[in-house]
Amino acid sequence: MIWIWVFLASVLEEIIVPIPSTAIIASAAMISKPLDVFLQVVVPSAAGSTIGSIFLYSIGAVSAEAVKRLWGIDAAKYMSKIKTVPSLVALRAVPIIPFSAVSAAAGAARFPIPGYMLASFLGGMVRNSIIAFPVSAGIEAWKVAGLPWQAAAAIVVVMGIAAYMIAKKIMENGSFPL
Image (tube, rainbow, N blue to C red):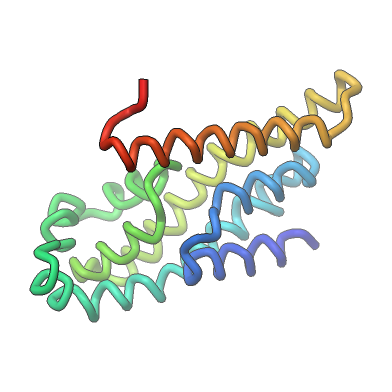
């Protein structure tokens, strides 16, 4: 039954950008059984993200010229090298590249919608697998070791806070803070 919530959260995550998809996937993987992760987390999240991404794709398509004129940002230029479905799948599969930015840029570049949907779904499956399976396996290993899952959740929260702080420093300084 968790797949319904994963699907809905993934649709909303694409429309309401500040919701982190990694948190949705990792949280769902934490409470799913390892053998269920693919059907309960990976597939529903990829489907939800793909459907939700049409919203930002549309905004990118409609506002591309205005953004270029106002701010000089030509998203179509950045997407010009991504002309094939396999290229877009590869772009979508990388966990650190935001789905929302790719969606808007693909819309601005007028990437064909059928290919865009296929690439978004397949790339989302790869991306979600990269996130969900290690989390699920780690939780199982944690259980076998006899430690409570709350300890693992606390570690994930601390790591998330550290990642946020590093990302914030990078944005402020323009480079890695070491």
